[in-house]
Image 1: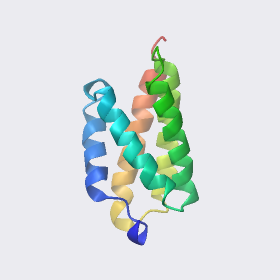
Image 2: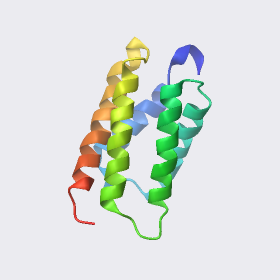
Image 3: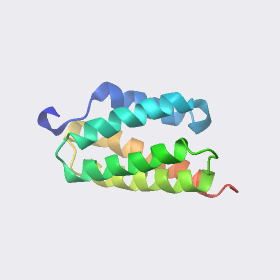
Image 4: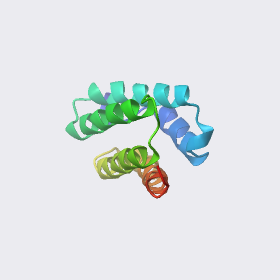
Length: 118
C-alpha cells in the first residue's frame, strides 16, 4: 500500500454497500469484498490491518457455514467495526473519515444482528 493509504474506490464502494444494509448485499459480493480487503490487509505489513484481516477470515467462515447464525455474524461485524474505528486513528488524514464511517456502519449492523434471535 503506497503511503499507507487504502484504495479509495474500495472504501467508497464498501461504504455504499454497507449503507444499503446487509440483506441487500448478495453473499457472493460480500465474499468478494471481504476477500479483497483481507488480501490488501494481509500484505500491508501493518499489524492493525493484519488483525482486521484475521477477523475477516472468521467472518468469511461464518458466511459460508451451512446455517447462518445472525448473532455470531453480528459479533464478528462488531469486532471488525471496533478494529476499523481504532485503525482510523493511524490512517492517512484524508481517509480517516471514510474509515471511521465504515467502522461505525459495521458496529451498527453488527449490533442489530446480535440483537436478533438466532
